Image (cartoon, rainbow, N blue to C red; front, side):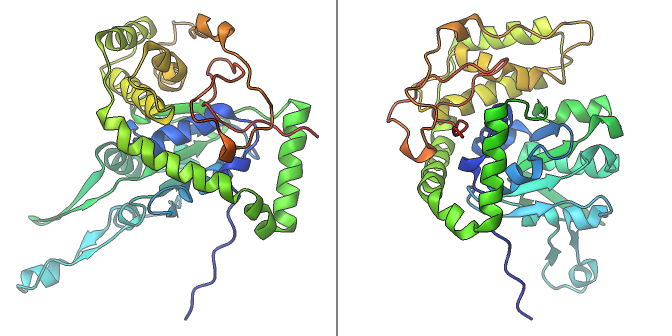
Amino acid sequence: MTPAPLPPVFPFSALAGQPALRLALLLVAIDPGIGGVLVEGPRGTAKSTAARALAELLPGSAFVPLPLGASLEHLVGTLDLDEALAGHAVRFRPGLLARANGGVLYVDEVNLLPDLLVDALLDAAASGLHVVERDGVSQAHAARFALIGTMNPEEGALRPQLLDRFGLDVVLDNLTDPAVREAAVRDRLAFDTDPVAFRARHDAARRDLTERLARARERAPRLDSGDAVFAHATGLCLAARVDGLRADLVLLRAARALAAWEEAPSVSPAHVDQVAELVLRHRRHPDVAAAPPPSSEAAVPRPAADDTPWGEMPPEPVGLTPVKPLRPLAGAPTAKKA
């Protein structure tokens, strides 16, 4: 039986608003070792739309949802022990972690998922490898995917131990800017009316994004982080009174991914500042107030035009309009004028 064709995907380049979400998703796409993105916010804020759009840009192009009722074997896979004991080759039955390799593993309402499953998927997301063991027989497989979990805080919270293991945390609000809200509605209606034509208009931007992500993934491991970067990251984590060293490691990896995206020659303290709130928001000690935006934001120039598409970015990154407490990515899409 031929499977039904998948529905068209809304283009990532056409997403309006939510610059922090776009930034976080791209960083995890560049370096899945960051440990995934937790997206908190109300319904109807494009959480699943953004996740599906990102998957299209990744090498595996897989978008794998994890249902709340999934079992551990459904998630991690299992070994056919009877085959192994009979002297045949070990046969691995892949689970969702294996299917998501190279793409996106999406968990809606992750705060309602059993802790055992959350532990397993966070382990795999951070290591990029999963080992299935049964009665002394083990099988390892690659599990390098962008983990995206969403939740509505009004429906319950994650345990602090699990919350800390998500690399980045984004808190979304409803779109209140009239121009951005109107642009989002116009684009969604246009996509629903004729998705093929809508995607064709964004095809050049999609190809540009795919190629740029590939370059960033290749460059990121080679970028140097000097002493000033390490000192700055350490200072921010100490000021936030975080537990352990995970925040330091994620902060440096996220800054490196951003530098790779911007094609910078090395990682700078400014890159650390741009990703700090994503990393520290859910780890900051409750007695510590959120850090103010970097003072350098006041000097960031505005782009030449508000409607520059992603497919027509200048060869060198340029600063964009400040968005507190984060600056959006160089070349990111802005709302189209009505």
